[in-house]
Each structure stands twice: as structure tokens, then as C-alpha cells.
Image 1: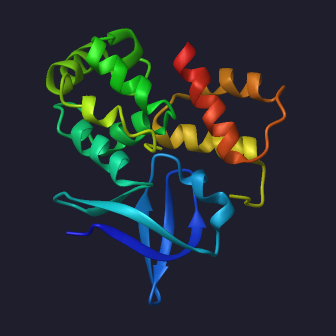
Image 2 (image 1 turned 135 degrees about the vertical axis):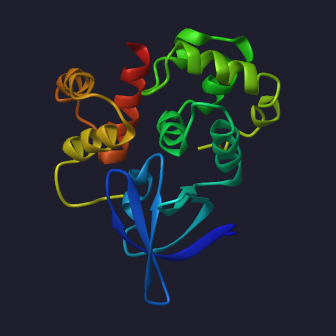
Length: 195
């Protein structure tokens, strides 16, 4: 089992990054790969969780241990897989998520891609009372070539949002002047949560 990886960041895509260690590139899925845009070709440390399936061994990465703990709790819920958990974590309001679970706010939880009422109820049932200790950790959650807005929209697609949802958000963001893919993605996720 892996705890973390430290190596040179060699690639950033909408759904994963590649970290090179001793000539070997590790593909690591992240909630928001564009968090690392300014660190391309630099040495970074990412906390890891390995998930083994019949057909694959996948690495999921996190900025810190608190984010990893939230991911592990989310994937423990029936109906939430790693991809759905990453889509939930991509929203920058981790304390809002924890507060929604503690308050049983099903409406908030169903705004995430792939989370319907049944799954939202299951999240509340399984996690209520188990996330409170994470509320105190405010640390739960660079420049690439290309169009930052387009990259942010690709990241939304990788998180599971539909083309229709993405198009609505893109129209709003085209009117804003933000700096970098990370800012566009953060703003897009905030807009998705308001729908």
C-alpha cells in the first residue's frame, strides 16, 4: 500500500497527473489536477490511495491527509465509487459538504454528478456523525499552455458533468476574466452547486 509519492510533475490532464520517480511515470487521478498547474516540471508530494479492481490497479491522489480521509469515507458508502468521490471532492467547499451530511441536506448532495436522492440518503445514513472531526481541518483542500477555460470545461467532463450542464456554466464563465485553469474550475464548480 502507498501513503504518498514525491516526484517531478510531468503532465496535467483534466482527470489525472503524471509524477515521474526514478524514470517511471505514475498516473494519479485527482479531484482537481489543475491545482498543480504552477508546479509543472517541479517536485511535488501527493498523498495516495491505491484501489485494486479485477481489471485495473488505480492510484488516486490528494493534496493532504484530510482530503484522503474524506475520500475514503465517501467510497465506503454504497453507490459511491472513486470517480464519484473525486467529483464530490472537486468542489472546493469541503466544510459545506461535511455540514450538508451532518444536517442531512439531500438537496445539496444531489447537485454532484452521479448522486441521486437514493445515494444522497445513503451518504447521510452512512456518514452522519462520522465527519465532524474533519470540520476542524481547514486545510482540506499551474500555468499550462492552452485555453484555461477549455481545460476547466474538460475537467468538468472528466468529473462526470453532462455537456448541457457544462455549456450553461461555460457561457457564464466566458464573461469573467479569471487567471488560470484552477480559478475557472473552482468558479465552475461553485456555479454547478448553485443550480
